[in-house]
Image 1 (cartoon, one colour):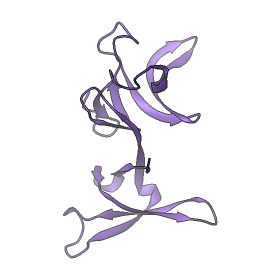
Image 2 (image 1 turned 135 degrees about the horizontal axis):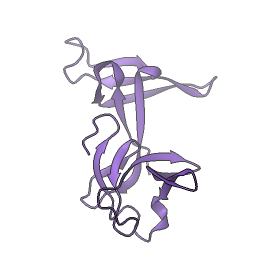
Image 3 (image 1 turned 90 degrees about the horizontal axis):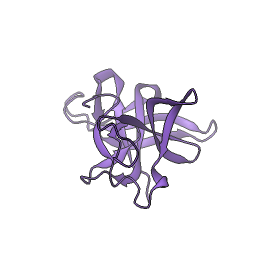
Image 4 (image 1 turned 180 degrees about the horizontal axis):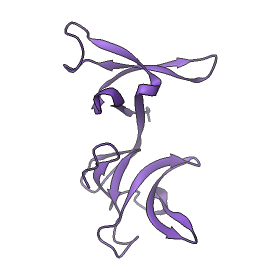
Length: 138
């Protein structure tokens, strides 16, 4: 699978289309990203390079929710019934320890509860994207 990202551009407080990632191979880190002009930049400017600290990259998990919507890191998802009896229980999709998971505000033994998508035979099939950490639709 080819990695896929969406980009939240902090200065405009909105998502923008990603044209290119620009890495510093010597320091092995993201230097900047190039964003497509969707009418937010100067006229005649097709793309604009911006520093990496002005954006948040959110990676596609490769999964879709129960309605076919792509699930990205940073999405807020409603938990499926087999995980919780609370129909309003939500969590945020994150990446760590080599997997995508959902972290919510419920605590177990003093630690935040974590749900690994791959604990199920059909990952994410019953999760529902209800917003994201930037637009917080819930």
